[in-house]
Length: 116
Length: 114
Image (cartoon, rainbow over all chains, first blue to last red; front, side, top):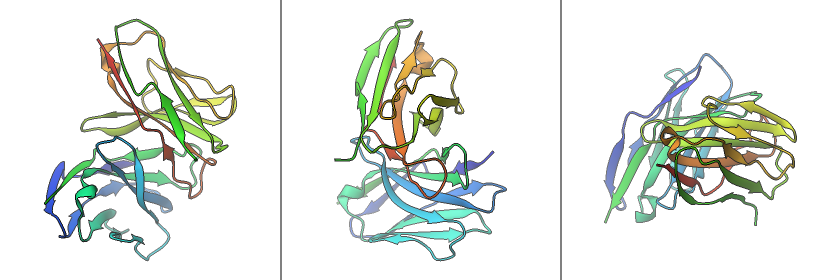
């Protein structure tokens, strides 16, 4: 079974600075997807970024980028120029490809606070 | 607007009183699923459905039922709720199983079972 580990339960960063959230996963699969979801206080689950394991290039979405290290099974999220609106719970998730279930395995989450 | 709608958003009830949390999506998605979110555990899948009349258990199905009579609706039923089912619940949908299809989540339902 796949497991996803987020080793930082809480983190904080000053506004405008850069922060990196870590995620590691355990799988024997070679083909899969990785995701970062953001959950603000409103409780919505918002997709931030996704990475396909067969792509070596790290995904980027504006201020959000990932450092995908397939051999190390690591998938960290870097947030540049942090904004107050980035304050949220962040979940790392794994989905096997192909998967009959679309089941996403989530980490326990990292609570990020951006301080003014 | 494309969305997944859950109701209610909050519910406090008592042990043993049957309840249903509704989920509806307007994107004609084939795949729908239910998760529960608990502190320190992230989200865990309860049940999923790959299409109408096709449902299956996820990781934590005990104490829950689902049905998929129509494509757009996927209600979660707690026949006899217990306090250990107090949690934050999310319904999610995606176009179909497999592939690079991220799931769209509802806004969550916070259930408290006393």
